[in-house]
Length: 331
Length: 236
Image 1 (cartoon, each protein chain N blue to C red):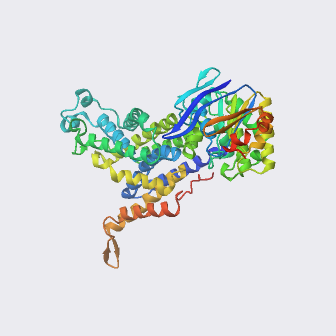
Image 2: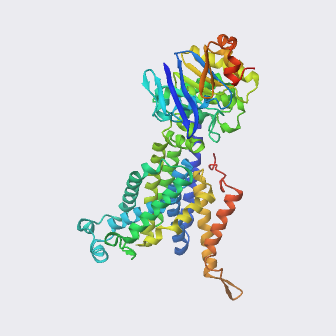
Image 3: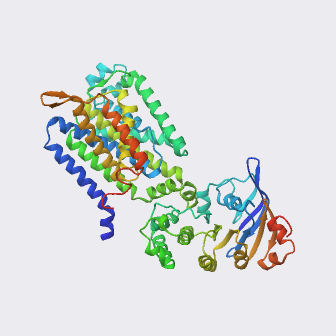
């Protein structure tokens, strides 16, 4: 009994942290609340990345692609039919007429992203190290190119508008909690243990009977599922979709959040996301200008990105295990 | 049980094995001795599916193993304790043991076996919750053997099990291997520590230059006039 309680303590503490963030958001002004909702959506994306990167040791650069797949899937299923007829006149009629409730968009986006991972994953999962990272980046480029040029379905380089603005605090909180529970339950499974063994020593893991490629695929698909949900939530937060929104900048942000927090623990994913979200918000305010003695002092534009890159560099140099040190909260 | 027939293995232009043949019967202990670069690790690697032999046969209970991946070979009943132990350093001792039972479907029995090994090796019980990387060399060797045995193999292969260990620990390892044999598990050991292997084994193969130079019981091999020449490549 005690052992089971101790085993699930880190998850309980992380859920409490997320609940505290949501409680703070609930009593904050609208602008701040919106940024905190965005942080919870980012958390779903970073936890999704962690499920694969943290357990396999392979850092993928293609998860923004799965977010794009989730976002466009959700958008195409939930945008009101008359708007689709206006913005996407060449869309297949059956899809043009489809109009699902907004709440159904994120799970649908997650499932389609997971299916995409299941299709492209098998050949990629045989790769390790930098080869695997570059292969996943190539995947991102393919998704970006398709989304940016498939005008009949995605609107191409134009913004796809009309997504219901359904990502408020409550759904963002629910999905953040779901992501944490899924990721933690997975990391406690035998499958994740086998994958972590392959992260340590691939040859030795095979020698104990671990089917490395299969275990990686399980994590990759689960990871894409959460990423697809995060992409859909992001779309329903902004109300519009652009191919550019799911490319290099987003990839850099979620990778930086995970690396800075520490990619070998779920606590690292949470810590990295929330700390970067806080710092980003402070820098955004600084870039907008802070009145000091009657003068508006502004931080230089782009300072946020530069500092994020610097923070990642410093962590990699001086604390490779990230802010969490690879440990779980209460573990 | 295991029959290796005329096995040839090369890494590019470098030949590691040239027509090696040997057999291991159930419950037997067979040792492969030889100097560095003799091809000993390559032989175990080929049997375990880590490296691909170019020709020859590796038969286990009559079925060909060549071409199978290593995880499939573990499922057939062959476990390898690799040179340097290769324990999972950041995972706990208990997690390492759990991984040893990866291929087993009988979860409850596997858990009972893990507890049994923790009783056999008390130091592992004491450190069950600690990262395995903190164990000493001898403790890591115990963990590596226990992990391999948790797959319930019928053939246990060990690559240099005495490497880097104190004589007292080596004795403990070989004492435990004798117990393993009594349970019907065959043991195939690769050793540079020829003396220990000669004393413990039913049969010995001296490997040098990728070829079996001499075979027989420990006494036969030691007393053979060609032993020095077979082992060192030159007559002393």
